[in-house]
Length: 460
Ligand SMILES: [Cu+2]
Image (cartoon, rainbow, N blue to C red; front, side):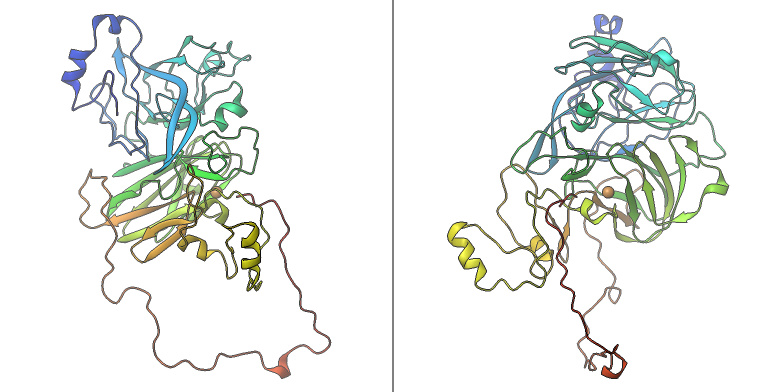
């Protein structure tokens, strides 16, 4: 984190006091810029009302300056380079050095002033999705305010009236600016104990977002409506998404926002959770049912709570199987069952790099080190302790450990399963596989259907 000036941190208060000049204090706060894609530790508040901070996956929370009782933040809309996975950098637009922008955390009742500086090549605005605020602060350019011209700074100011999880994003040339990565999270913590908001030990936030970046290129294609090839959490794709590391017995909350163009059924292994809130606010107890998957629709936020009581490395992912894959630059028919013998040599005369894909399924792809263009990520990848995980995109893990210290968010490494608790190979005798008896088969002529999936539309 490149803290050009640090306005709020328990650890660095003394530094901040020394580094903020009187001129800066009189003017707008200097922006804090993030240069990396690591998950920052929670930003413990050192001014204003106390709260239990969130952890943004592969992201961070924006420090503020307290000015006469008003929390002042400075967002800079600008082109950024975001590392989506190790070795794969995308040229996006975002805020303060990254896409998504920093999470803004405030407390119910706080007076908030946000300076927004536009360093994009076109005008922009910021809409504060889900907030109660004066109409002129809602950020729809043309409707609520003139757009923020290139090079100008606008000021938004309102009170954070209700606790909850919200988002921010442009409401000016939205199609371009959101496809380029402009979005961020906003959390308003309750000011006191709230009957519908439990206190939790760990509180994670991330945004579902999606991009269309051709393998070998770096800039998202903004015209793509549905056929994005990179399905990401906070503009990161597996294996670039950090794991959610918790202590066994922790009460865990995860807040998930969706600013893609489709819904995402988010699935957690090994535990049941309850959806306890949305951007509309905390849900009544009567609306909370146990689930292991919750669909997060476009423009929605879902907050899930659960007790992390099962030790292990638990998969946590979007259940649309094409959303746990990375970029594919091809339209191919399904070739499972096709005999390729002889064909490959013929094709390699014309295309020396030709490889057979999917003769037995696509799992081979996860294991083959297939040459790929310079700036992209393998389609199905990630190595676990027992081999290739064959995943990409919207996939991570919940890591539950007995000895994870409170407040420690470091990756504990792979889970060591106790002896006798892992699936194993049967090495005894096998009976003949039971088949349907000929006498039980339907009579009459049989048609064998050859299924060949249609060409094109390999959208995932
Ligand atoms: Cu999905």
